[in-house]
Picture (tube, helix red, strand yellow):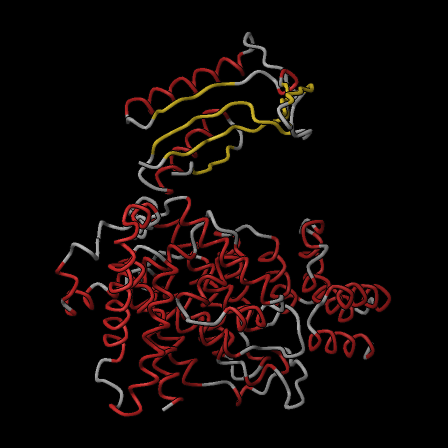
Length: 414
Length: 115
């Protein structure tokens, strides 16, 4: 039962919280109510069995408990409460009998999750608060778990989350889906935040293990939800495809002893074919819409890699062309860096180094992958001394133990 | 309706010379923004401020009032002016702030008023 309950929690906590925030107009009240409902479930469900619609049960129970509490407290200070409510579309639980009907409730659940995504990824919040807020409210992670994921003390993370919630609250942030005019920017922020959750899980920015599956799978879960909620947004589909295709290589990215394995050296039989097939389908689906965006192009690049039965068979000319397209959409030095690596594969290390030299190195000087890529190209071009120096700089910059071990090994192989 | 402070921040050493075309352009843009705020019913109050070197800091301690030459915060960037606006929510306030930043061609800060 504990495991089943945990599964229901993982699946439903975010959805229930999203709806309760709208109904109660307050993030903290909603979180408390959902937590209380799960406590009641943990007591009752072992006897009654899991109800047919566990999410509905949790939402209704949480709502009832919260209403009871609100009614009690409203006698003491209704005005005080009203003044502290998050700005919602005037859903007053005390005076809206319609909300007592479960069906009306469940109908809007879908929109609520979207509202919550836009709220958590509000551009007025710092990125280091957006991601924890998403993990906390939408993925139902405990503050302690989030703190461990980001390797900060729990008190620091708790403070960050409290501060973000308070900022939304004090600023009268609305719980709504952005209008068509605002949507492109706001959606980009949501996509970026979900991708941050994924990359944080994919390569832990610091720590001993290269991947943290929990964060990656939460990000994929959120990506799936977003595609369900916004099926006509090709960038949302692109993001999901990108995450699935990256995830398909997870097992092959490290040896049994935890050593990092480069894409070129990976055992491709260990790639997850089911994820690759799903990723490919999604890439095709979004490309058909002819509204290219950065996530779609990155997913297409990942799909070209996935297509190659061996590293040598990789279609580098297509990858280079896709990087050109990506750079025109997002002229960022990191994109130029990846493009240089593709150029090196296509035309040799000298051409790759020339492309690297054309990037403004100042912006990448503290970026570990820049020095690692440069070291590799220098080594392949036979410029050993310069390669050693570039490896030294990369090793100095990495904070991930597995990545460090890989770089040290590459360096000593020179 | 919630109220927000939109403040304009700039390098305080910069001297405002109203005869330059740049300043006149800014003044015209800000005037237009003010008119927009008033038409939309979002306007509460606004003012441009004299340089921070004109400020005086006043303290009260145990019934004793003392004063020193200001500004209070000795930072290079100082508040050069502000608006108090009314907006339905944060997003509406931020939209006004975007227009304010464009009008005065510099960064603005948005803060909600209590209450």
